[in-house]
Image (tube, rainbow, N blue to C red; front, side):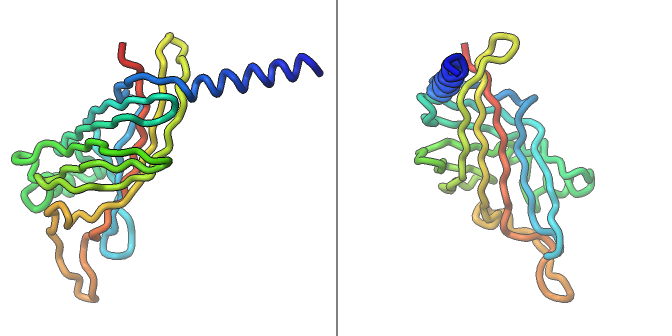
Length: 189
């Protein structure tokens, strides 16, 4: 009985110390994703992601102190080349003129991250729900942590207004974009 209490206490201390770990982290793109979904024809969702992105964040005792990221707009991937090329065109992202989407955190409170999101040359303050993990040592001796972000933006707020009306009413592409971002970071050395 005494040994199990000691082991339970040791496990609790280890978990608490992992959560209280503080350090700057660089996003590991091999274990991270930047995804979205948006209504198509008012009846279904199209999902997609960006395959080229980078970022950093800083944790201090389980509190997110900073979070910055950059996405390469040309790396958009919805699984259909023709649609992806249209999204890269002047109708949407204009990747030649606006090659990046950026995010810079301005505040973190409880489970919310607020920051400046820049898309298509337009910067807006957005709020995202956040889940911040503690840090763990991987089998290769690196400290890792994770941040999950979810939220919703209106693409029209960023000048992405292309659409077509449907004969029965409604439009081809919805305005609300749901974001789902999973970041795993490796401690910077």
